[in-house]
Image (cartoon, rainbow, N blue to C red):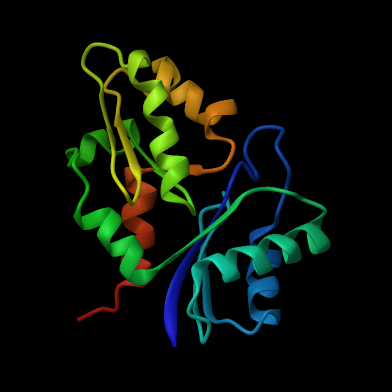
Length: 180
């Protein structure tokens, strides 16, 4: 069985739609997935599955979330190997004290990531913005709320993707990686 991470966009944040994490665990289990664990209260889970295709998993989970909770939102699924690549090949390696100032943008399609190139003019002094085939990375030392790119990612420009800060990304990676 393969290991996967699922990321829901914009749930349980501010006045956004609500998906209870206990309910998400139950939903993933009902879909036939095992070893389900959620992280924080913002639509993050890891699980094992016999399925092999993240895109099919994302589609099935999105439909189930809509049916169970009445929430329509982008659902991003990455295999453990894909997620490991996103973490290991990060062009930005912030010190632990800056993990909350580093954002990773996840998408199901590389084209959606490449479309973010139009945000380059929004880079402010001191910020670093890098788009790869696997994810997009933003380091904004002044804070995400002061970053014009950060604001754009949370708004219209980021509709088809979701973001997590580096601390959450690392925690999810640890859940996916078997202890040695």
